[in-house]
Length: 171
Image 1 (cartoon, rainbow, N blue to C red):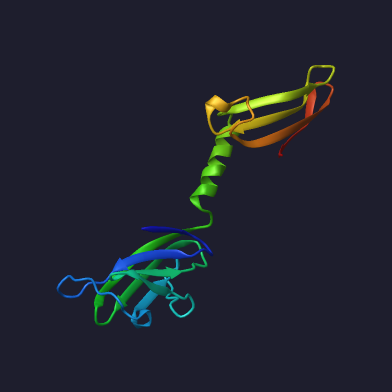
Image 2: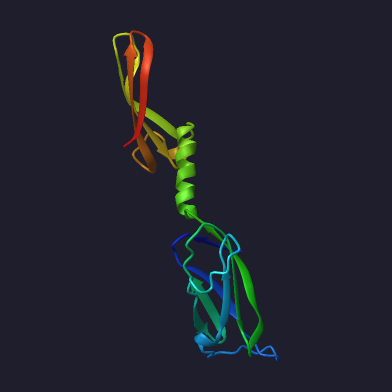
């Protein structure tokens, strides 16, 4: 299964061989036929353009830009050289894995993994008024200025000893 991101080009590669198993280079890209189905199972072949380019030696790449999240299906074939075709599923996400990985690291940090709190201020009752939280991508860097994933500033307000508000802002 190919993985992709909405509104970004997705590639699916395939090779074309003849009946003897020999790679077939130089096929005109416009002679390939394709069918593409969106995540709802709708045939969107007439509205989603698939580009096919030869990579070399009989290896080709089909590319398209998905416009919705979900599981897509692409079939590419050639009536003479590649009648059995190539089909594949393409899972389209709203975020890429690098973005998701960063979000997970931030979540782990906010659950106090590789977490450091400093610059604390207190009121006359020793209630915490403000602080800075830094989260790190590894334990070795905790408390340093290295490998900081994110900073958060916290401000708390009180009525006597009763906490009224607690605000956390990514800084």
